[in-house]
Image (cartoon, rainbow, N blue to C red):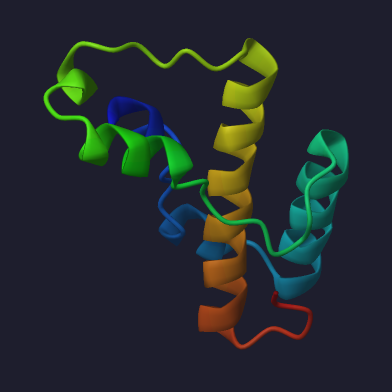
Length: 94
């Protein structure tokens, strides 16, 4: 994984302290704030491009716009929340 992709990977464990209703509301709020679907996943296109062009991954910065980087981080949080929702057996897990 590239640095850009690693910044988007979020642990789902901290979300386990939320109730199903709280976590669903938090996930929906995050998705609507960035205009993302409730089942958003981490975008692997950048990682795939770097993998196809080694050793550029170690020297190229994340050249996406600030908005795109923030949306990528939100995708990671949404994916982590969905993982926690599934693990807790909550209804509404994407």
